[in-house]
Image 1 (cartoon, rainbow, N blue to C red):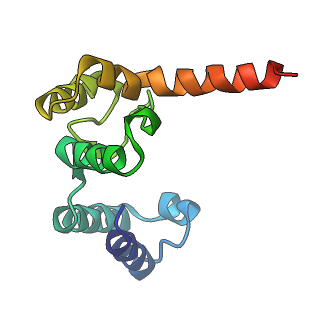
Image 2 (cartoon, one colour):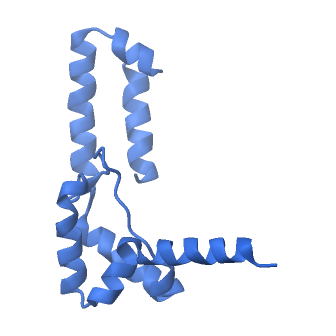
Image 3 (cartoon, rainbow, N blue to C red):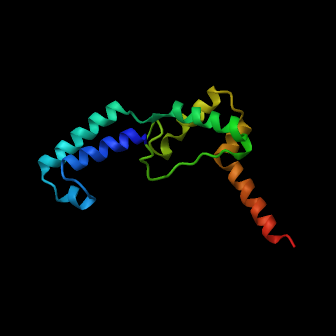
Amino acid sequence: MPKEKKAARRKLAKSLGLTSLDAFFAASPDVRTKFRTGVGAINRKYPPATVSDLVDHVDYAVKLIGIDHVGIASGFQGGGGVTGWANAGETLNLTKDLVRRGYSQDGIARFWGGNIMRVMDEVAAARKAP
């Protein structure tokens, strides 16, 4: 989340006296409605990242450190904040964008677990080394 967005949300919460989660739950329905309305306005000003934005970041990381050192993972509870990849069920959207960008099946397999499994195997082998 951009720092400007965080600052705007903090300012909104403070202006409504919502200085903690407990304060939010104890707030009147009117205050909660004002907060939700304010958050909606902030989200329109600072929209969440898209799948395309995320793949831009993958491209950047691949160029910076190489495809063997980049991984992608999803939390299975959702709420990741990426439009088009809100939960694990939308993972295909990200994979399709990687294909459109020219990543091979092997490269995509590395992102989706191949790299971390390789590293874990290397760590296990190093642990067993004399």
